[in-house]
Image 1 (spheres, rainbow, N blue to C red):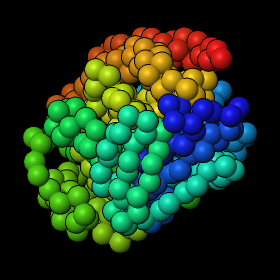
Image 2: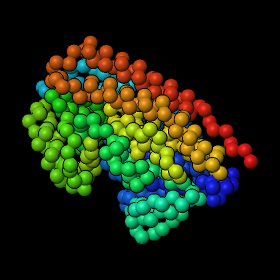
Image 3: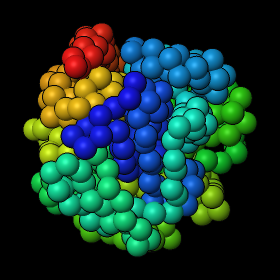
Image 4: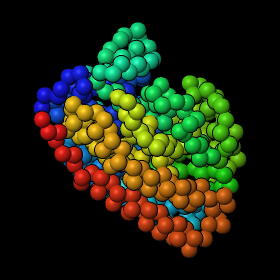
Length: 399
């Protein structure tokens, strides 16, 4: 395919080298377009939690030729349970509620996708967009490095705190809804002796979770707590660690031991838990994808799947309408609307059982089962919407 120049999408700037950005880059390059990926960080992200891949996302992975490798990197958890403050198991959860058909660390998924998306893709690490100016036939872009460029289409795949979204659509506060919680994640040795398992400890307004990775040699620790939205320095991990320590101090069980490991880990990650919602993720020659456009939050368990499927849909629409970005963006917005809405709704329901307000002693099995069933129904609906959207491929543009 030779995309038209000028009114087309031959040159595409993708902001963000995460999951959505690399999937878009791969599919655009395969179609003969010329994607450039700019990533603010000097390297791929080295911290974060596990993510789930479900349904049509596995089709996208198979199409990229990476499905078998992802399966070898899966967490392979066989059970996930709640404990009380003495460490006693009080409830065992259905594995599919916590993990998808494939669950693996976000960092490992990102690395595999990045390695697969090399041919025909230019990457620029350590740089970011400073300004966007649409001029009719293209978008003039200025970068933090001082470089300038002109692109037919710009795609924002730069996450919850998307700079692309701010520049093209408006301030973060207009589109990001804080869910009343914050999160932290880090990795440590398997001091608990778990094997292919994970657990949750709930206290009022706080949840500690951990699960095994890398053949049960290590644990990923997740710390979640309720808090009104507050300003904090996202570039100050020491202050973030102190905040976490104050919140979880005295929680009981072996929390103090795990908090000690937080001070020496090299992959600490901290952020708010929030959802992103835009009536239309496209404006002019700029389109958003993944968390930048419709991040449902980790409570949904669908963020990575939604990002992968949405990225594939966007890339395919651009590729099949190289002379008409308006048509491509209109179809993209229509196709992803329902799956994004249902994923956000799923997160709202799942938040209740993930962070219940009462102590784990007060979590009745029948109420937990009811919450699981409600989540199951919404998850199935969201996956059905994704499959319908993904199974409705674009028709190639007519000459």
